[in-house]
Image (cartoon, rainbow, N blue to C red; front, side, top):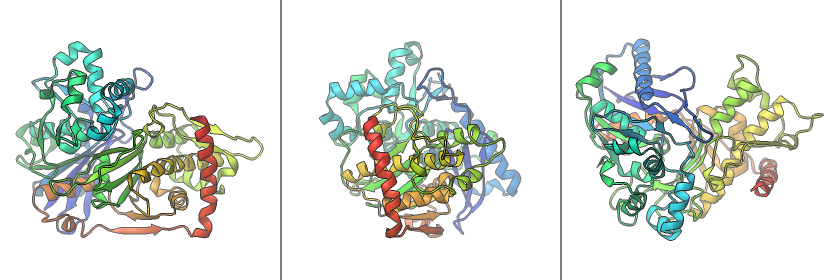
Length: 494
């Protein structure tokens, strides 16, 4: 018997099959082969066609079928991980009314700032644990204010994972965790954030029915079964935003545990059982996937928008045709810690929450034509990403989360020894690397939600640790010195 997990990202869609008995992946694939198209009609905008997610999910699934020859009738449950903070609007027939405004779109920053001022930061922080910022609720308000003809047709406003689940089941639903990611959940009153919605002039009826994160949330209908090549009636039993799900995929469920990813975005995600928040909303607090009555679990999220796009930009514009990320990493490793004084500030993908929603732009500083090479630029860029994450982690410490052990999947930038060593050296933390990813986490979540696993510990008993990275204290100082110089310059720029 198998569990199927989908990870609906903004760069690609990945599907994985997990053998329920062995707890190991028996097939995975992603689509498209190159990065998914992003629509940017204006600076700071980022949109995608939701139906492209569905199309690419089908393609990924067909790749698995072709490469494994597994009988898909043995799939017993489906889980979904999805890009957070996006907005999908549909009419009563389920037709998409406009492209999805996705997570890195910054058009609603001013809307969220005004709401924070008018409602008061004391209210927003005590009830929402965040400024309304540039999250889903504010994006919905942008549509209400700027595209009134479209807004009048809205039947449901959904998160990307809600829409994908709808395409599988025909049922429009969401979760408390998902609503908290969109800043549409009142933590103090334990219900939909009615006061914010009222301020925005949004009727709460546009939000879908709420279901538990781990539960049977619908079953694959006849139309989806035919389109995806699946059996009708398979339960969709888990959905979660990509970062809570990535933490879940690493078995990060308890207070003090920390997960990190460095793919499209760079993320550090810590779990807490205390209602604490950053008063400037530079890091954000949401409901974690296993939050429940009598067991409060909150996820504190630090996000750097520019991670993946910077790495991609360097490969396309600095490296030669056909050069790989592995070649980039090897070239960068030739350069000493600190990149001989070259500093990269990787903020070139719109407003960054960790910088209080400032759009600083990317900067390369200290360039010396006599000593710096392409390899220096590559190392400075990786250091800049790590240093940006460490800058945010210092803010996270104010919420009670300290990075002693950081768990990560061995994927994306964590494939780079330079990246791993720089993070371990700068923080002093131990980095634990695991064989997993978001789609496998979603598959395990489906096993829990459908009742095939009796507990989280059973779901993760086969999770494989690959290695640990720990930098000796005598070597940490060089990393910390380089970081302090970088941080001093960043504070000057701010």
